[in-house]
Amino acid sequence: MANVNPPQQAVTEQNQQQMQEQMQQMQQQMQQMQQQMQQMQQQIQQLRTTGHQASEYNSIARLDNACIRRNSDSITALRDYTTNASIPGFPVTPAQLWNMQGPVLDQVLTALGLPTDSG
Image 1: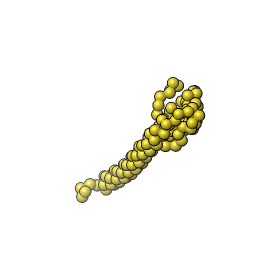
Image 2 (image 1 turned 120 degrees about the horizontal axis):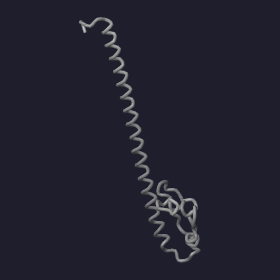
Image 3 (image 1 turned 135 degrees about the vertical axis):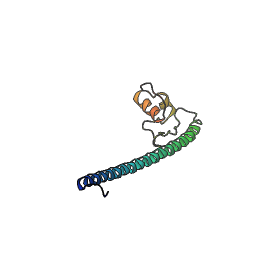
Image 4 (image 1 turned 180 degrees about the vertical axis):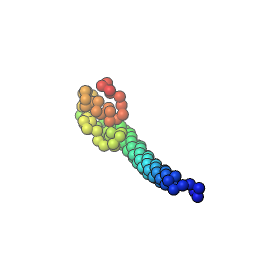
């Protein structure tokens, strides 16, 4: 830059500084995006694991429930596919299951990933 006069050199240096700052900002944004993507991947894996665990538990519960012979026998409750937690309002007996309706039934169906009449 021997042929550049001092004011032009100052502008050029300022432009270079701005470009470097912008590149640093872009690199920081890319790192943040990579971290967010990693977090999302971990959350997806956790959901898959949770769903798999709930599915296994529910399969065993269904086998257990298939042995029920009386309407007063206890049902092994199924678990929510998204949380692997007990489903609030799940019936305790086959009689309660047959009498389920409205919001309680919808809540159980939704937790099992099944369609409801209301949604």
